[in-house]
Length: 264
Ligand code: ATP
Ligand code: IP8
Image 1 (spheres, rainbow, N blue to C red):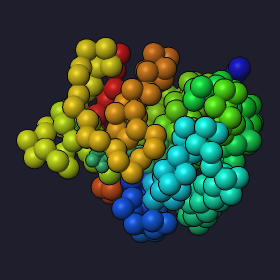
Image 2: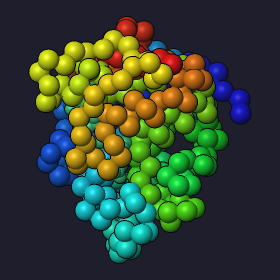
Image 3: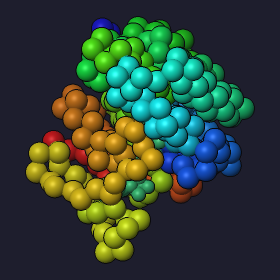
């Protein structure tokens, strides 16, 4: 598939940044407004952009309550599928409208309609929709959500996996994960005060101690780091940065070596 002409940046807005993860259905509107302005500057500099966001306090509590991540064996009622999709659509609507207010032609894409998994792994992604939208100067905005799965019936596809496959499929130059910490630490900085920030993490050589992700059905920071493999292998520059600090996302997109770079 032909890559779009301009330089591409795929941005994953972590649910821990755009929502208060401990408070159900709470958007951090001020943070989202600031990040939208930063994304606007990255876009105006001539980059094509795809935004993917996580579930935060919208998708995760619903998915966890009904164990939707394990699929149809959870025995969840059909209403649970409706509820998780509705929660994520509500958050997606917030993200899209903040981006539009910042002057970005953003279009929300329902994940269920463009992605499919097998055994929890993405086996189909309608990349041509993303490719066409960015070729028209539009910024597609997708999100981690429930998708149909050929063996599990359905499952929760993480926005991290989605962002990685979009970055690989569209030959993005950069894939930036905005989270609520500076990057990857030697241990969870929330529980280990001696944890140190790692400017670089090697997927093949480093062993990191990760904190547990109790309210996160898709595995938290550990899963995020491990899921980046295909992008790193494809030569995409992958960084995990702090989206809570002003201008960090923007500066990382413009080449400043902030946060943690993930390497092979
Ligand atoms: P979402 O899945 O909702 O999009 P997110 O992508 O914003 O969430 P989380 O999955 O919440 O990100 O991961 C960020 C959290 O990971 C941090 O708040 C931090 O406490 C935790 N964490 C655990 N282990 C580590 C580690 N070794 N280094 C950095 N953060 C860690
Ligand atoms: O927060 C999962 O996406 P993530 C979304 O990017 C849901 O892992 C619905 C829990």
